Image 1 (cartoon, protein in one colour):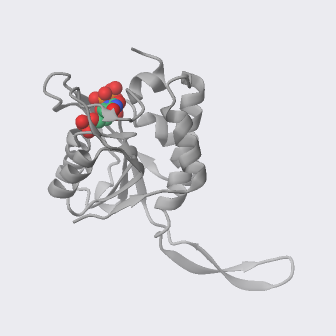
Image 2 (cartoon, protein in one colour):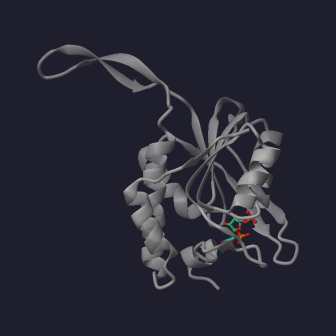
Image 3 (cartoon, protein in one colour):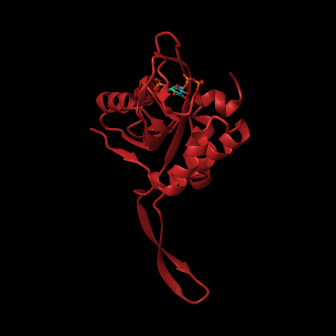
Length: 209
Ligand code: PRP
Ligand code: URA
């Protein structure tokens, strides 16, 4: 079964509280999501392999470390995943970005796929699938399946807030995928919204309703 990592760093938790707050407006919400995504990217890249290199400092030559040329890909789930991409790219600027378009049918809560565009060298890359909300888990499971069907092998899932139901579903269907979140909330309500959550992530990011 994939591992679950909950980032309890005080800066992440502090900013997440403002993100949850319904009085936080679109501009501030977007900025905060961007900042938290960057902080989460710092934690999620902890296991990147390093290689030894030589560098000439103003004083002498020495051995030092650099990331060992790992090829990474980011895959935001449209729409709300877009709000986290730039924050991650600030720390991993060389990552390629693919997109998976899914929306949740409001009646069935089942994900409906409408767009997939991924880097061409998909088999050589490790991917981070990005979505602020892991609710029923249907969208994340479908996005990961879409990547696997096209040849992706190594993936992590990064979300701001997860419901226990969504975590369980991803772990059942994709036991090879580790999940990284800023918070695990209590439950889903009758409309499949995370409680307490932050509301509709796409609407809050883009000012729609
Ligand atoms: C939201 C969210 C996730 C999905 C999570 O997207 O961004 O993709 O719901 O729910 P699930 O875990 O139950 O599948 P939504 O379907 O509202 O689409 P949008 O991002 O286009 O608004
Ligand atoms: N999608 C959202 O945007 N919010 C939720 O709480 C659940 C799914």
